[in-house]
Length: 92
Length: 464
Figure 1 (tube, rainbow over the protein chains, first blue to last red):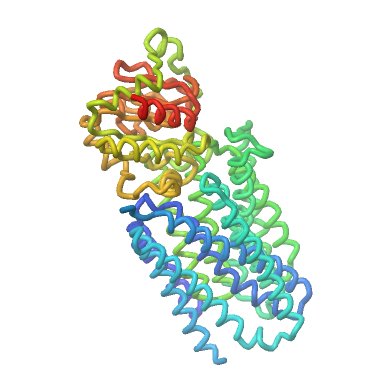
Figure 2 (figure 1 turned 45 degrees about the vertical axis):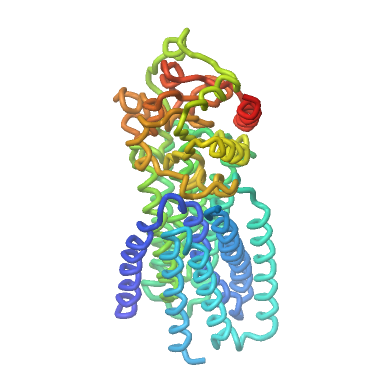
């Protein structure tokens, strides 16, 4: 139970932090915000790596598919966000 | 490597994610912010890889990991490089789906592998299964509706849809409860995922084209919450932090989109907002009052004009008119006119869609104005050009409380001295109602495809 309260505290505080930070993002950048935050949610990749490394064949297989999905999320998300953000500039 | 060191690396990754989002507050710091986020991800991955569990897993595991990362990187990079800016809503929908799918699989694998199960693990696993599967299938449906491969863009509604959804939702909770009571019942987890998959499809099919910004924002939020739930499964704080940040982001965007349409989330999710009751007949609104115009006539409007505002809508994306619009902007600016863009929050198919298209065409972001910023100055606009937008400039939102778009904040183009509406026909927008703006005294209808209209206009301005 103590462990749960610990991670639950992290969850609640991170939600508040998220609200505080994201409300500062202007509508101008809402699309890159979505693709960029999406890349961040690819953090499930960590769980996928741990699943692949298990001795059980079934969980290794599940982990492998999850790893491919999460990597698409991470690489595709950060890259497309980078591509978009480079377009937002001032011309002289 | 000691666990505390790995956890410190995860903490550093979380901090980098937060810095990344802080960077998005301004276009100047945004590129760096995104790199911080990517760096945080790299750090988290490296820390996980050097973790004892993986180090000792043997060469077969390492080969599987290398193959998975190579495959995912290739697919992700191809998608990111190939996708046109007009296809960004589909891209984000797809990415949301992969995030949700990964959460379902990781939670399932953790359940199978668990040697000792806690209440936290089982409840979080059931939650990951429900939210992740809804996200995965919902996102695939959203992707398909945007792409219009199998499903039409319009809402799909049938009798008893709500009841079916309730039954499916209860079934998902029921099977989830079995997982909690008996963690060895893997079949129950599979059932959770199957039922939630059906729910994901049914929850997304009633959402129509112009409501897609809400659906995508909501699915974005779900993908984050699914990640956070998986964090509870693994008892891993970096997953919880990253997942909650994304969850919060999606919730905020969903709220902004709903407010920009003056509709409740429930109304959007059930496919409301389309005219169902009696609406004014198009003939009564338009008959004899619509004036159509030519590129030459519009070109003449610019003589003596000082301030031009362009209002882009989804039609601009469809006809790929953004580059032509940039050329027109340059030309008018060389003639000494001031040109700005008025962007409605729900213009396009996802939050910020129009801004990305115009930025792609190298239009300075200072010229892209938010609705609330530009509306008070609309009276001082000489020419307002509406390209492929309809409901977001329909003045009936202000005047008719029974209209499906009643109370929706609009861009007040009708207050400009002259309004030019570039549109292929008088067909109604997503809400299915006629637009009195098209018949207003100060409105000229320029019937043509968006891109061709602007190119002909450029030619006319050059020869005038």
